[in-house]
Length: 107
Image (cartoon, rainbow, N blue to C red; front, side):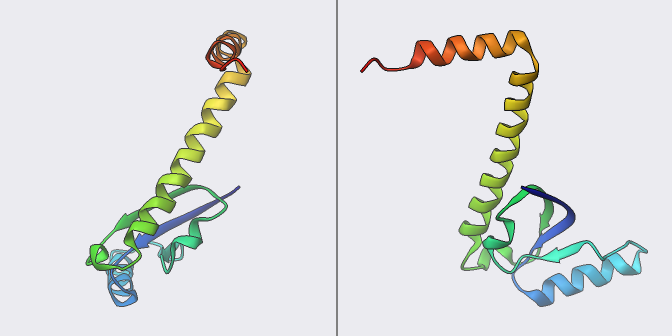
């Protein structure tokens, strides 16, 4: 998984994105990290994503795919952090092992 400091912008179209970025630029903000979401596939392999929904994003034909990709990426981050906490704590690691053993279905 890869971490980028991009700010992902989900907008109805590229023109809305460009207008948004120009407004931010006029406020003196660094716009180099703003990225337009062309497709849900852009989130594959990312560890963490941050961004905004703007304009007519709801009218995009792929909005459900984009929302799903964002949800999957965020849930992967949570699972990774939870696994790290479990593995780094002897107490949590023991509880996790006991819970997993007790919830297994006998063959």
